[in-house]
Length: 198
Image 1 (cartoon, rainbow, N blue to C red):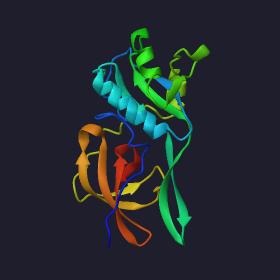
Image 2: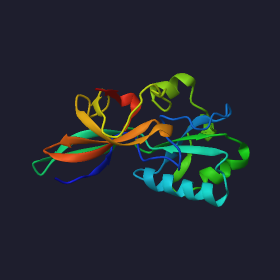
Image 3: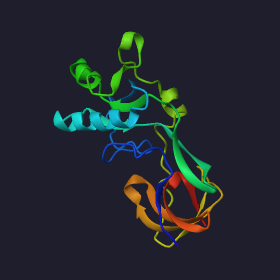
């Protein structure tokens, strides 16, 4: 059987150590903002913004960059494959400590047309919007996993499947597991919030 590495959670997607399910930076001044991009330029804009962050050493101001996606199973040439589709085309979600001093740096990044807000000025998402969009999710820290454990997937496109844990990242609240999909063994990444230990 072939092993494939698939990530079934929202993209892949973030800066190093960043993840919408794990609030690694607890600074109360860090808020979620929305950036508008050129059509089909979401990935390009994200990559360019990451380079800008590195160039100007903004790691202590901009913490996460998120492209909203949803994984669906589609048929291609008589085969079923897992495909990540953008749920909000032309938008990036960014968690940052905003200040006027970085407005031009961000808006001049290639691929980004500006902030979403009144007259193009940044407007942070409300707490309800953050929760509704699942940008922040509480970790199921009570789950203690070990390599070889069997788990039942309870959330996401693989809900209902049984998987076997092959690696554990307790700090990030994630694990890698093997599940049988479409007749072959596939390696997937799962959050502990998505599984229940059997």
